[in-house]
Each structure stands twice: as C-alpha cells, then as structure tokens.
Image 1 (tube, rainbow, N blue to C red):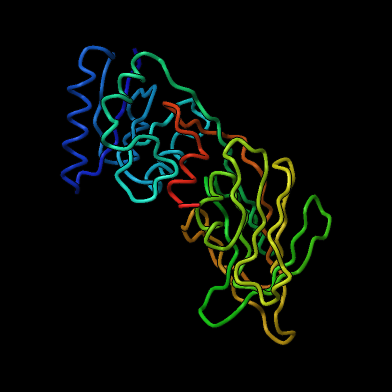
Image 2: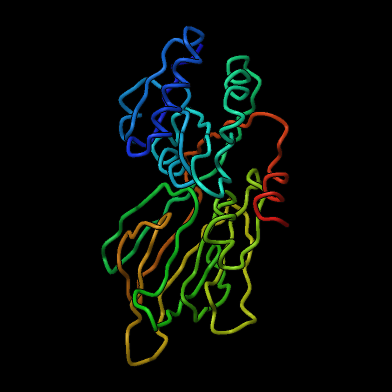
Length: 274
C-alpha cells in the first residue's frame, strides 16, 4: 500500500504515543510509515497519504504544504472543535482498518490566493485555506473598504474589516463574524463584513469563479486608514488608503479523506449543537 507520513506534536506525549501506535498497527500492511514532528518535514518524504494528529490549525498548515500535490490528508482529532479532523481517537483503529481496505472517499477542497497592490508594488500570497481578512490595524479604529466582484461595485463597508472565506473556512472566523456555513464541496466564496457600523450590511455569497477586489478607502477624509491583511490568521502585511487586494480561487486544491458514515451535517449538528 501507500507510503504514509504521520505528523505529531513532539511537545505532547499523547501525540507521540499515538504516532508510534499507528506505526505498530499498520505494520507490514503498508510500504512505509514515517513519523515527523514538523510540517516542513512532510515535503522531504515521499508521502502518498498524510495522517495529522492535531486540530484544525495543524490540518490547515499541512494543507498549505501539500496543496496541488495530490496527497490526501486524514485528520485525527487532538484539538477541540475539529471540523477538519475526521477521526476521533476512540475510532482510530477502525479508521486505520478502513484506510487499509480502501474504504474511504477523497473530498477536494479549494484554496485562495491574493494579489496585494500597494502603489507600484505588486505581490501574490497564498494559498490560504480558510480566509483572507483585510482589517483595521489598531484597536479602536475602523477601516473603510470598497468591495468589487468581477469589477462590479458591490458596496462600501465601514467596519472592523472584510473577510473573504472558502467553504472550508466558513466554520472558522467567518462563523464567529456571523457569516453563513457552506457545505465543503460548494464552489462559492463568502464576503463577510466584520462588525460593520451599519446593521444593514450582510454577508454575500458569490461563485468561486469570481474575482473579488477590495480597496482601502478613507473613513475620515483628512486621514488615511491604517489596515492589515491576514491569511489564515497570519499577518501578511500592513495597508493604507488606496491599497487594493485581488482575491480569487487558487489553481491548487487539496484533498481531505472521509471515512465512515458521519456526514458534514452530522458533524456540524454535534459540534455546533444546532
């Protein structure tokens, strides 16, 4: 069978013990089982499947590493909420048996890229898995952002920021910002204002084929707004009035392994208690 790479957190004893348990359990049923403790080590091994012992944040890091490489990810929950982690620890051996027998599905998911335009400078960042956020830089200030979809003007938002989310990211920051939940296989993006000054400003869902352009304007005519851009929670740079961000679906995708009969909707109902 495949070459399997198992990522674990070396700082946490249960993760190390479980990684070794997986290696013993799979035994000679696979070509190789390699244990790694750093996400960057995955690229050094010929992985056919990556098992991630961690939470959603760790799965996102791995997805960025393997996007576009046709290496599926199976998440084993060592975190809290666990929307991206497929297997809870009590079901570990059962899940491994299903994996060995080929009884699993692969779910292909999208990522995003962003062109950052600041004066004459342009750079592209990504892929990101959950969301890009253009937001205020400092506490106590708002930022004014104009939004365009395929060069059609949508609206101007005075808010803490604007969030552009994938379906995968719809259950992350987007959910906290009162955005809608999307099924992970939807070909759509969410534009969500964060704490808008006007209560009439609502999230908007658009096709994943659309190009979304965000422009930092001025909340007060005499002063430039000070903003920041983040991708999956990581600060990518600072911004000011006149800067633009062009966000679109990335060419690269990543695959998650789905095992068993627990659907996304079952997981949503249980984890969100809806």
